[in-house]
Image (cartoon, rainbow, N blue to C red; front, side, top):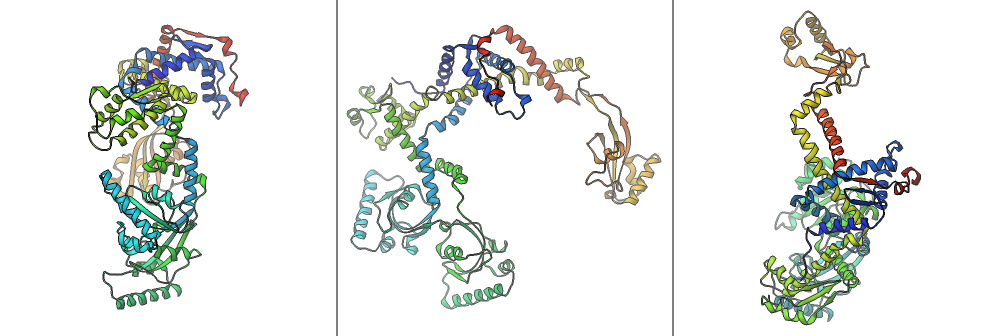
Length: 635
């Protein structure tokens, strides 16, 4: 019986990785774990090759000491069984799920799809469609009935019936009543994937077979294909048509718009005219400015005249749409970006689109079937039928095999029960389960199949263990051990000291007269904190800041105490200081708590490492170490 892949697989993964290392000549053995020269070289190069300064580059001998310290901490974490804690295993499994994603897809197919979708973004298709809506929970019989209707209408169109008239009469798309099925021009990612796939591959003038999408079945007819004109930015002035507008009122609005157009031609500011006259109040507040749009994102009656404007600043004559009259001004244009600039965005949109992502997944699954010798038992599948079988006799029916793994009806039935599936098309659920198991099989082999993935997972595994044990043994302990920290401070209390500082007041006044008067009063013994009362001035005339400043902390203090140059924003005619210079002195624990905690952590870590070296045996193979090239020599 098949064992389901789970988080526990991770334990096997790292055991396997370690066993492979055991079979190679070790460069170092730490706590009975043999580290091969290949593993050490890979990590040594990875952590040293990208350093900006040569002084930071370690020799193999220097790096080995750091590596040993790292591995000792990991070994101790393993000894304490931190790797078996549920929270650790779940976090590592989460990282693995993210890191495995690029390996569970057909990269060549995805690249081809990405380039094809970019090609579509570079072009626009003008097409009409007839929608035959399929209810969300339609039965198989209902689906077949709707498909038959679509095929019947297609035959009528092929026999001579006008496509757009058929759309008006039969389409379940509400917009067909006024556009007779014509969707105008659209580009890539503006339609659902199956519809887009058909529209961009259908020869001009032909009628498609029924195309199934999440909305239902579509008959599609392509009228034209052209290069994508990119995106345009415009401002407009609009006179809106009220419901049921008469021809007389239309003519009056048309005259008003031509009058506004004349004002524009005479030099009046377009933005001001939009604010004064446009019925589109939202854009009027912005001088008529609208967001960027492409052909497919705007009604054709507006988009086409807008794109016909050649130059930035050109203005159209009044244009009529179903919503009213518009005067359009071109304010910007940008072409479709180059492939390299859109590649990441296209890849993200593919991943977020279930239907496009499904296409990629299907191709990958077919590839895995061939690679692992997939075989399905058609006779046993017939015994499942369209209803759930719970009798014990079917539990051991083999449904398919993949690689060295057999999959039984018991596995499928468990899937149905776990997902609380008790009705519906069980053949569809079987396909879903089968495909997920094929992906899971490949997932379980990634470390064995891809060394770079195995190394990456080992790094995450060890790094996560390191974080957990450092948090437990050093970071949290140092922060909570107040007695130990106090003792450490007393031993090293002269480690952190203040440089010369100024303690007193910075007084800022509104004008020089008040400043001079305030300085005289303070020199005569009045406290700076009482200067406002002594001056009889309004509170806003004098600002007093009390504090202690190091050099560089205050432009005023720097100027008066340490004779620095006048800095930007500081005016000595308005500001002066009063106080005393404090000589260098030792920082108290409270003043340097963060620094002392950090030092205490380092102190604890060094002592801990000494204990670990006593606890876990370390053996270095100096002969193998000498074979490791210095990073500087291989750059």
